[in-house]
Length: 452
Image (cartoon, rainbow, N blue to C red; front, side, top):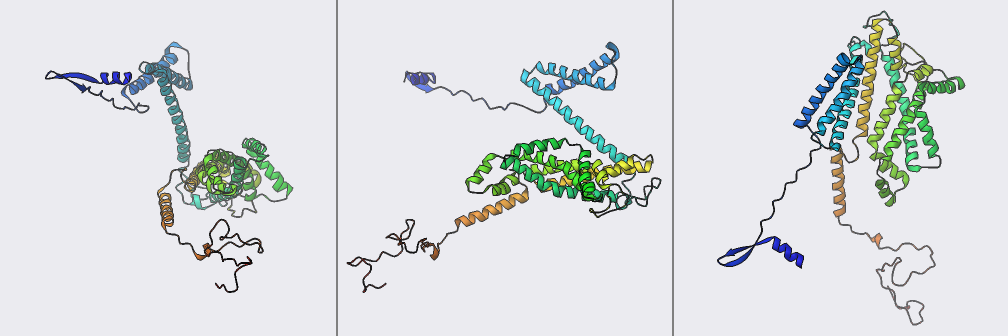
């Protein structure tokens, strides 16, 4: 009570009015607006610190390499300038911010630099390849003809890479038909089943990830061609490529399946669903976009292999659409064969083939993205409309009155025909619609005069 009196005394003041003291409430303290802390974006001081540190780092590198120290080399110059820039930027940021903010700003610059270097490298590779192949790409025969009737000295208007494009598509299709079911099944076994051999299988998969491609080609060559007596073909190359793709798909799929929340599987099993139905209807749809990424990684690894294809499929300049017989060539092998020639036209064909290979990988990536869809919780317009229609159907079904039919009141058949039902109605505690017949005096059943 004393605390409440003190509080009331603090929040009120005495105001004399015509000789009478009136207690008036004190003015409430003004509320401070909630201002969120700025954790990103550009500020004036930040931009000035960044530009000043960049200029200071460049000047420091110029002084060290030109005047003060006997340093030389372009790589060392840029490394020295960048390290000086980071140090000076940390000092300038520390004048206004605390240590945590300084570390955050410096790591942001380092990450932006790494991302910029990777994008620059990718742009240089793609741009250089497309620029060197610009002479061969505009010709239509480059995509519709093979090299059977064209030689190294022929112009770019003769010959093409149709045989290599078809061979690559056939080989990668065979490899995907083998790898995707086996890879996903093995990932489900490692993540959902977890049998006694799961640790051993995971160890073998991780070891196969670093398997050299030539070893895979030699294995298929020894088993399929030398052991079984089969000829070199696109089918054998597909087997060799699948050996290279399989550990990549398994490892990536295993990581993706681990990210599925355990509460989803627990809820499915709590509703009585078996394990296979939980995996098929809950786990795999939830991780669909990640599984598509795993397939993309495996495809990118297998589509660029050269040595396994050379060992198992051979080389040919003619178009061969039969993967079971005859040699077959792929785009990476065609690029290798074209680029090693000293003729400018053949080198142009090689870079054009490399550009087509990158475009093919990009098309496969787009197809996999469309099939994989968006991640869990992110629906496109078509999926949102379909979910809304399903919700309306469920709501209508729940609101419809349910009138039980006559069969709902029929008693269930008894397991033992000679066993009498308990008096008072059907089993399971249900009340019979007909009252029990009155017993006669002897207690043996209804009298002869009773009729129903």
